[in-house]
Image (cartoon, rainbow, N blue to C red; front, side, top):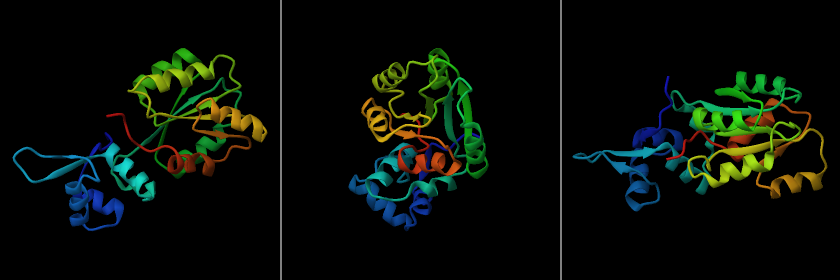
Length: 196
């Protein structure tokens, strides 16, 4: 089933635990961006605008999973030597995750365009990938800029972690990897939204 990208005020109200009238007020005041159906008073809110609004107002993103068909897409870029598989398997069972893999820069680029991941888990020890180049490419393309990139760093110290964050990674995971850490990334830095 295709993920729902546009929501009614009633659907937004359920997600945010408020009355539909409250959502209408947010819309009419310009706080929540969307559009009206031509020839109607009905309002529609793109999922990306809702997520932005929720983040700005401290509304937990966990209720987004109520949207029928919502799937969180993860691109795993690794040579296969990374110990992430078990943690990803646990995360898939616990939530609506769809996983694709890539082994090098070229595959990662193609998969980013085709698969449109919300999150890229990038094994920085994969010699077939230039992590700096991947970050720079994603950040320079407006159609890919929404993708969050997490470094899978094995075992590192706090100085190395700060260095990775300064290079443009949104977060850093170090071993041992576990499903809870992966799922928490969606609430902290990523959300199921395509670029608009």
